[in-house]
Image 1 (cartoon, rainbow, N blue to C red):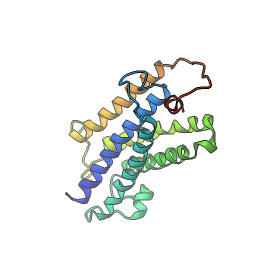
Image 2 (tube, rainbow, N blue to C red):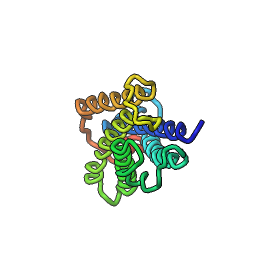
Image 3 (cartoon, helix red, strand yellow):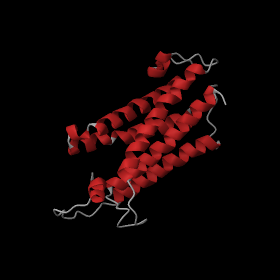
Image 4 (tube, helix red, strand yellow):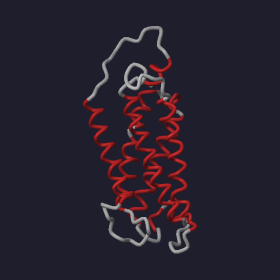
Length: 198
C-alpha cells in the first residue's frame, strides 16, 4: 500500500469520524439521554463526541501530508497549506483545505468554549456544517488517483461519502423538526443530564 492509498484511506476514515461526530452533536443538542431512553445505559456521548473530533482532525492533517511522499504528484508543503497552485485538481484541493481549516476552527473554539460563553460558542459551532459540506464535496469530486479523472459517483469510496452526506442531511432535518421539551432544572442534576445539555 503506497502513500496515495494511505492518504485516501486517512481521508475516508476522517470523513466517517466527522459524520459520527456530527450525529453525536445532534443527539447532544436534542438532549437525548441514553440512560432514560434506548439503550438505557450510561454512554459517555459527550466524550465520544470530543474524541471523534480530535482523531478526525489528526487524520485530516495526515491525509494531505502523505501526498508529499507521492513522487508522481510533486506536491510541496505550500501546496498543502494553500493549494491555489497545487499540481492538479486545484479547486477540489482548495475545498479540502477549507474543510481542514474550518474543522480546526471548530475544535479550537470547542476547546475554549468556557471562555467564549455558551451562546457565542453555539453560534460558532454551526461552522461544523460548513466544514462537513466542503469535506463531502471534496470527497465526492476529487480523483483519489490524482489523474484529474471525472468522478465515478457509483465507486465504493464515493458511495461511502455520499451515504455519509445523506445521513447528515437526514439527521439535521430530524433535529430541526424535533425540538426538545424545556424542563425545569432543579438543584439535583446528575452528570449525564448536564453533559447532554451542554
